[in-house]
Length: 57
Image (cartoon, rainbow, N blue to C red; front, side, top):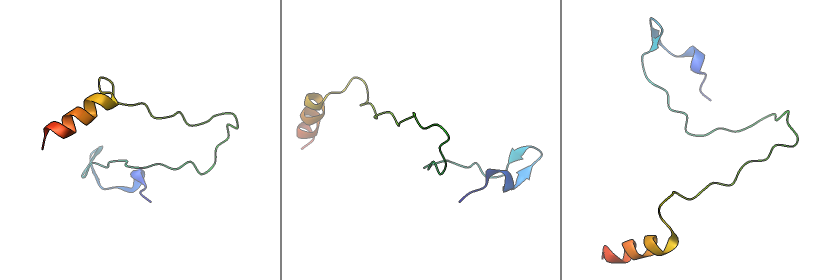
């Protein structure tokens, strides 16, 4: 686990930039909230994706 407040800094700038890759909710105080389904990238549908993959061979 990375603690962002404990990293090396020069002035108020971190020496190495941190990248948050994954998060996990340990304690959720909101009972009625649920995760939203992930959306497909806009502009591409399944037909266009399949057509592009076949054309590359």
